Each structure stands twice: as C-alpha cells, then as structure tokens.
Length: 271
Image 1 (tube, helix red, strand yellow):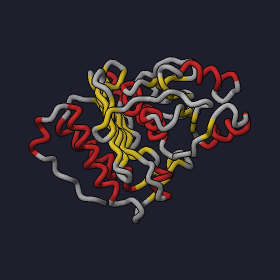
Image 2 (cartoon, rainbow, N blue to C red):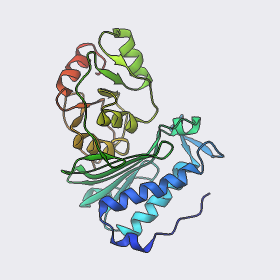
Image 3 (cartoon, rainbow, N blue to C red):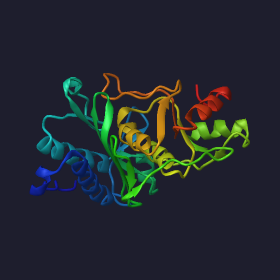
Image 4 (cartoon, one colour):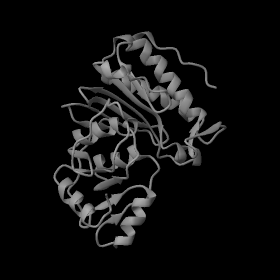
C-alpha cells in the first residue's frame, strides 16, 4: 500500500478547476507506481477486476477532497454509494482508474476521471492519462483543453471513423465497412470519448451498463470541444441520480451527432 500523500498547504486556496487538475496529477503519480508492477487484484460482480491501484487512488482522492471540499458530495466507483450526495449542491464524481483491465494488461490507455457536478451536469472536469501524459480538462462555458491546447471536434469523415466496446466493434464489422471506418478497441470508455473531443475519431459507441463515474468528466470535455454525449434517443445525460447506471450511448460532434445516431439505429448498432 502506498503511503498517503500530505495535502500541500497552498492547495487550500485553489479554485475547483485548479484543485481537481492537481489532484488528478498527484493521483497519476500514485497509479504509476503500480503500472506494470506488483498489483493485488480482486473481482467484483463475478468478473470485473479491481486492483490495489484503484483502491489507493480512491482513498487518496477521497481523503483529499474530504479535507479541502468537505461540503461536496462524493460518488466513486470504488466507494460504497451514500445517497446523502443527492442533497448536496456540488458532487465529486470520480473513477480512480477508468480502464482497469487495460491498466492490468500494461496498456497505456487508462485514465483518472474527476468531475464536479452541479444541478445534474458536470461543471468542472479533468481526465488524466498518466502513462501517456495526456491531460484533458474543461470548465462549463470556457472550452476544453488537452495539455494546454484548445480542443475541437472535427468535420466528419465519410464513412465516419468510429469505435466502441469489443461487441459493438464486432457488430459494426458485421454491417460492413461501408458504414464506418472502424478504429481499434481501447479499454477505457472515457478515453474513447476523449478521442472524439480531440478529433481523432468521429464517434464512440457504448452499450448500456456504464456508470456516472465513467462519463461525467469526459461528457463536459466533449461538450466544451463542440461534441455531444447522449443516450440512444439523443437525450443529454444527467448526473448525481439515485441510480447511476447509464443506457447505450453515442459520442459525436454536435454537427453530426443526429446523422450518426440515425445511421447506428437504422442498422441496429445501437438499441
């Protein structure tokens, strides 16, 4: 177990956006001590892995924000849910390591996801990928950045370049390559959606079963880059809900979201 990192005194004066960025970077340092190294593994719900790294990062962030933002609610994949968060004005929604399977396999596409949700929508967000040193951040109304550079979704390719879960990629292949140019599978859902925000791909699909902590941070990052994350009916997602599960999803640029969603539903890629 990694020893707890003390909270620097100067962090007490930081605004929310700066605080979650520094917290994500510090959590990244912790996670990298386990990456491609010794890491205890457990399984929840029968087959979903959770590692010592997940727990260490979760404990660090929980203690940090409990000290510096004690009035905020807390929702994390690795902490038992407490519905007291539903009565809080602001709620921290955290995934200590999004893409744990890839992390354990030694792949670099895993992320630390931190969002602050207010009035059911994220207002500050950071997605940090320590193994690639890619830090995505956004604040509502102020745009999205990657490592200090402004993000913007791109004009759509024809056919659109898309990715998703392994099952959805198989489904896209069954429908033929004329519908989509298929991008390779990556294990982190949040990172897949971030690739839409950077313009590296046109669309990212997800089947039902994701949770708020997978999506809250990257939802804001995508929106501020000119994209949209929605359910399979095109409806924007809401956060800090009593039930944190999400339906099937599409992330795409705002300009092309409706067309890609119609295409996916017509060919039964999304249900």
